Image 1 (tube, each protein chain N blue to C red):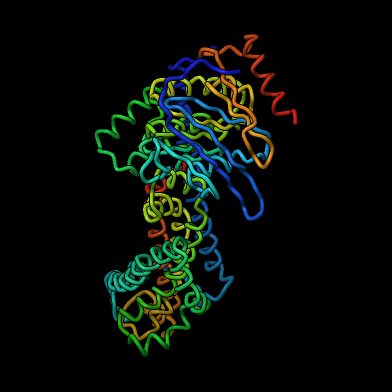
Image 2: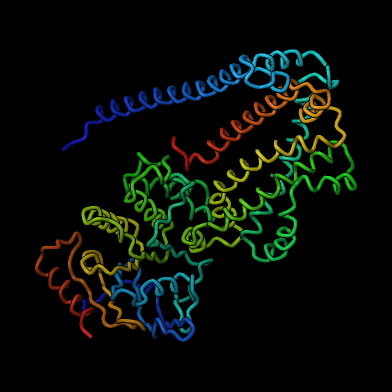
Length: 252
Length: 277
């Protein structure tokens, strides 16, 4: 399934990316590019190395070989802004909602007025006004997860990585949050890599789905999802995409 | 189904009211506990279930306390002088230990070289009970306020270090990673993530330490004191005045409870993200 020409410039380039832990080869020579403002989902069987893949992209782990380039430069958390939404709850419990959203902006030492402006933008985009002074423990899991996602978008990152952020949500909340992520992505023009093992979620969100093989992970195939947002999960074309990707994951 | 804002607010105010009522009931219950305790004590003495010379009645203790407010007998100081003397010793030792112990524990818990350097010495000194230090302290520091404060310091220092250390060690990996992926360096992560995350454990340590400080006070005041609650207690024992001894105990317990209360209020402020609001 190919796609018509995409004129957006390349934002991220992954070249010959390999990661070994001792003798264990987890990522085997991955090569791909991500366009500016693109929304890419990465799917693969459980335990295929999806999280390792993200950890290498964010430099929590150093790659064994190859590298990740942002705007042609080797990725560097000091210079580039890479935001990460972790699978586990990662709101700072001692900070209020607005302080949580401002956290990364303060680390990047942005000016006070800029921080204020971005926090307000995220709060109003996500409808978090009522909760701005609340602490995470006073909020439901899904609201806290939204705060974390808002915190990442507030960074206006070069690259936003999300590792199964909705893994613990039920279906109804999930669809709601997925729509919200799409809205934020469109509004803020971020470049997003979203990891999930949920194929329906991938087809619902992504412009392009990267399918990984079993460990050691290589790219099995890239699928362009040529459907407008918001997508309808009952649309026959949607179902075709879903079944196609499911087959690709099942079949080797 | 729509949720009516007015109903919600009404529900909330009803809930708050019932909570307040419940709180009042709990306070009354606690007060009743103390009252029953005093009553039993009074009755035990009244009906001579124990030797009255050895155990004064609460009314007698109260009398002694009131008498001591303006009289210097038998220890040579009024109650106020004794309280000030003890507070001076206890607080100077206590705060010095907090100021040194908490940062030390935090640094040890976060920076491995600091840990490796300090830990062996700390582990060797840790099992020595504070009172066992008295002879050493007398030799090196003398017998004045500094010496007594040093004994208190030693008893407070250990729990402060241990709790700060453990608290910061328990910082969630994910939260550290969040700060790092945002580009924070190790020291910034320590300040912005490690320290706040350790605070609940630090407070637990301080609370344990506060108890330790008061219980060591009496021992510290054995060092040639001229005033202090512990000293008053000693004199009471020497002149066989049980009422003075018990009055001293009561004063120590009330002061200790007040300090614990103050600490509780501070904790509620600092850790408001953790506690029920």
